[in-house]
Amino acid sequence: MVQVYMWKEKENYSVDDLVGIMQILRGENGCPWDKEQTHTSIRNNLLEEAYETADAIDRLNDTDMAEELGDLLLQIVFHCQMAKERGAYDLNKVADGICKKLVYRHPHIFSNVVANTSDEVLDNWDKLKNREKNMQNYSDTLKAVPKAFPACLRAEKVQKRASKAGYDFKSVKDTVLKIEEELTELKQALAENDIEAAKSELGDLLFSAINTARFLKADAEQQLSATTERFINRFEKAEELALNQNKDLSKLSDAELDVLWEQAKALNK
Image 1 (cartoon, rainbow, N blue to C red):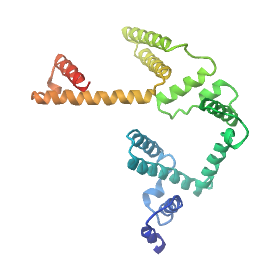
Image 2 (cartoon, rainbow, N blue to C red; image 1 turned 180 degrees about the vertical axis):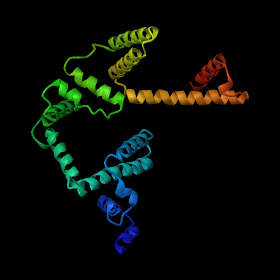
Image 3 (cartoon, rainbow, N blue to C red; image 1 turned 90 degrees about the vertical axis):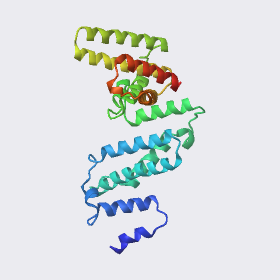
Image 4 (spheres, one colour; image 1 turned 135 degrees about the horizontal axis):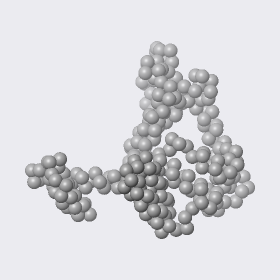
């Protein structure tokens, strides 16, 4: 027990200390909650910490980034400790694997392959990855995109990989025409009151919108997030305008709400 309390006396900790602390938490006299967890039970924790790290990056906040990266590192160490307990792998094994992968996929640094531009580097990376993963055709590369990815990201990656096989539009104008086509089909499904067809057409419409984002070299996920943020700001301003008039948004007519929205939009610009 004395050995456990000695952890409180350290001024600075290392990654090795984090591994040791996790071993204690998962040990015989450890924390009941930590001991109960499985890879599946903390799966969403990993995703949440990754998103919180991304949020700190977007805000360019070094303090928050350092904290969130620590939380993310904890999830990695947590999974590694659980795996170590069943004899599968540990943090050193994980580090060994990624180091070998980096050396293998950077032959222009660690071997005699020439790659002078980022495009050449990425092209080599994809070829080596396909060989490493034993992907023998283009379909294999599409199916290899994880289903757990956010939908926008997965769609974009699938589209990029299909593009390498020639399945792609020629210009952004063509992608916009496809959006118009899918919108027409969505309207038709709604006119026929075919809800299942409408859902399918909506998916096609979203997929086409992501294609347009790709041609514009815009991150669809970030663009949607920015639009959501603009909506929140305009909503807040509209509510502020309503409150200044002693009005409750939920009690206003559609016409009154539209007027407030246009006012808020003009003010935000």
